[in-house]
Image 1 (cartoon, rainbow, N blue to C red):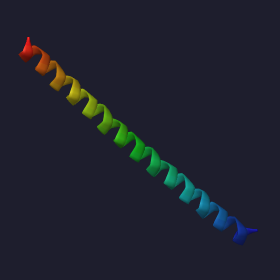
Image 2 (cartoon, rainbow, N blue to C red; image 1 turned 90 degrees about the vertical axis):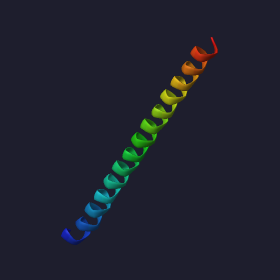
Image 3 (cartoon, helix red, strand yellow; image 1 turned 180 degrees about the horizontal axis):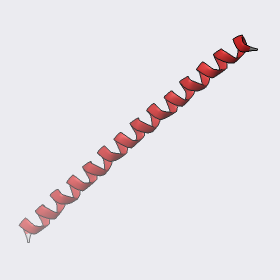
Length: 52
């Protein structure tokens, strides 16, 4: 029982770690995406102010 328990346990740890890594990557990419949108909005706003 103990020998069959350890591989499942390590597999679960690997899966949780993998999901956490995916979550971190998604969060970071989402933050970069939001930052890019914010920069784009600022640039567009500055352009509209300068043109008017």
